Image 1: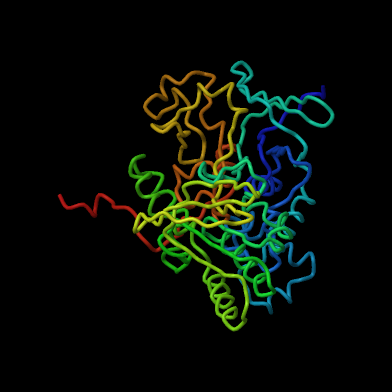
Image 2: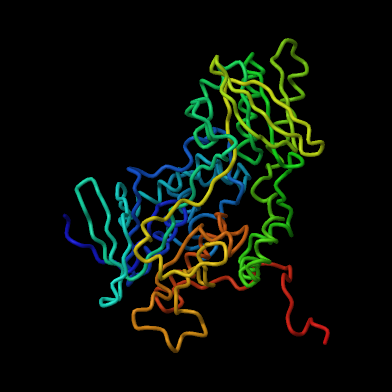
Amino acid sequence: MSEPISVDVLAIGCGPFNLGLAAMASTVDDLDVLVVDSVPEFRWHPGLMFEEATLQVSFLSDLVTLVDPTHPLSFLAYIADVDRMYPFLVREQFFPTRREYEDYLLWVVGRLSSLRFGTTVDEVHWDSHAQRFEVTATTPDGSLTIHAGHVVVGVGTEPSIPTALQSSSHAVVHSSDYLYHQEAAHAADAVTVIGSGQSGAEIVIDLLEANLQGGPQVQWWTRTPWFAPLDFTKLSLEMTTPAYMDYFHGLPEATRDRVRDGHWQFHKGISSDTLDRLHDLLYRRQLIDGLSPVVLRNGVAVDELDTLPDGRIQVRGRHLDTDATIAHTTDLVIAATGYREREQKFLGPIDDRLRRDSRGRLVIEANHSVATTGDAATDDARATSDSLANRLFVANAETHAYGVSAPNLDIGAVRNARILNTVAGREVYRLPSHTAFTSFGVTDADVIR
């Protein structure tokens, strides 16, 4: 067993959000942050790293810029360091490619000494006597104990395949692993993509390009009523600002859940450039004879997958407008069905101290900390000396509390600034105060009495 490590903040999970936390903390002299992750090395969506795929947010939505544009670990600092400033300028693109963004993240990783990979957190305990967390972890060298004043959980999401699409067949692949199966997809007679959204559309583009060269028959099914574009118009984007995030957080739980249902186009929509490419490919294939068929269906729900004796898969579903039952046979199913929050079993030892809402989700405070039993505002006077208030934080596990902003890269720096300000007990980073023109809520002066 290694000697215990003591830090001010332990961040569990090293995706862009906790990497951003480490980056922002790196310039704060009196704040010791350690980020751990079970993976052996940093990678960012390798199974979807298409050569031409771009981010859906601006390069300004890097790890630090939207709070501190002078930070030495900004995207522009990276571009300057790799001597690509003028080519980037002439390119005139606010949206970097995913490959370039991953290279930026790796550049940041290489400049931080506060990251430890190959470290799996097993349990998080609270030591009421020492007023700190005691975290046990497993490393390639054995067990490790980490003492931390605060913990930030940023373990991200994991691929989600609905029950109707689950099969013992190896011919069902989640979109996150597509590039590992690309060769088999191109060689198949028929491939079906289930689910729209950006990932599904990019995979269909790849299959359509293969189809032009004599590749597979393609079917694309989605439950959404149309192949909808991402709504990235100016005022709609204000729904992803801190102003809307704070407004949404202040709504009652039931209202938040109802409002969230209307936000589907933010995470199931397709960029307009991608839709243009799709339509161009569909148009071009009309000029070529003998290609395998391509079928696009919207408003269709999959009921079940049946594995046939020859190993192929029958996809059975319902047309939602007419309730008609439809089916087709395919060789490979790509499930572009999104992600779900990853389980946080390591919080088991303190779970009875954490407050949950009516649906069992963690109650998240305005500073992104997890509300704990006895720590409600009305209970401050009776709070015990071993209170967990403002000790445990979450990143990208609070969509139910903050809405569409929570998983967006452009909110990461603001969330981390709030966390670091809370941990330090002072304004380490100044938060932006005017982030939207829209007035989302109402004030007392607006109300007719």
